[in-house]
Length: 634
Image (cartoon, rainbow, N blue to C red):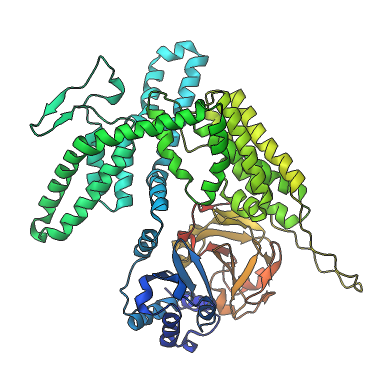
């Protein structure tokens, strides 16, 4: 890293690095978190000290915020995170380890420690989501293709007998036919096992030497291996998910235990062999037979809830679904959906419930966008509502609806009514992982599905319009006329989206990927992901409502934070060398700002004359902590 980039890092500190006593900072942090004995795990990233605390009651949060060197503090995903700054946090971290006696840990270690402190029920519900989210692209692609192939076969009867149908049907069905393999590999990653051994367990459970589970009937039963002590039914586990996850959990546990106990010189041979054999016996003798039955009961219960309660079950789940999104637990339904698709029903009747719930949040958010008079709120609500219509609801829920609550409740009601309609009309889909408008490609009845979406969004829209009122700022007393400041147009284009909110484009210009920014540090992503903007204007405005967390001494960069999002806006490359010439910073650290409020004015001509690029870097510095991060102008 060159000296210019190193100088730039100073802006995150708010003071010269040498002015901070790292040892004293570490000692004060330790003193205010209950000492080293209260630390379970400690790590750091580019800007933050990440701690997992044993007893949060011993943490003096007010004192921590006043520690010299600590620029901010927040709690996220079970971690206490102290914002210290680039180039400084690593030095404070080293002193912190020395003071507390804690062992160095990676970010992954800290996340694992934080996850281990979750309540058991939340761990159980969160695990299926951790397993299924990485394989969603494969499932979505296969499901959408299945829907298209089936639609073509119905529209063109001759197509069903063609070679094209056979080939495309094979391509579309592969992910579902061999689903246990995908689940096993992903589960091994989640549980910390060898993913290739996990793959072996998954392949073993759908081995072609076993009878395909879908072909088992009362008159067509599988053969049995008689091993003396016990018998093993020669049937595969096609379409099953829970037995696969539990088998790989056992495999990962056995593997890690053996790695600790087996001497290193024979570990390479003994551990994989014993791991596979132990897991295989346990899977085919205990886990598979027992939990495949339990899984079938769960699926039958879910199907009964949707189809045999007069729609009441679907109505209840349509109302509960948005709350599970807020808690980050909505991916747990993937287990049910996968089982429905792979089972006798062959249709995902859970998807219309999720789709109604999500589209209702679109309707509520759209009502806010239309009804509000605040241009800044409108600029957030409108793109968020459009995102929700495509099934990505986090920006709408966290950025608008849940923030004002009444629109969120209206969405809950709309989702419940839409889900009730979907259940009564027998809607189902050929995949999972897609809702809203993209669901049109996978649904079994497009006209009825469109009506469901209109009902869900319409009810939410009408209720929001009636019960939500915008809180406008009180009118200030009339003042003497003053020279009008140049009008600043509030940004309307979002460039970063995540579960915590939306980042609007802070300066007009051409948006480029962060890895195209002409600076190795920015382009590498070490400071976080985001975008670059090749400016056509000379004013940087706030990309959301938030607080100024840092201001560069050379006035060319600011940090803005809100909703656990930490954003860096840096004007130009190596412009720290200009020592503020050509820059006017309009805010100071600690200021509260509104979206569209001017933050920095700069001279493109002076930047060019100094020989530097004027590309503006817009980076989410804690992107690795946030869910659903999506970048690009929209």
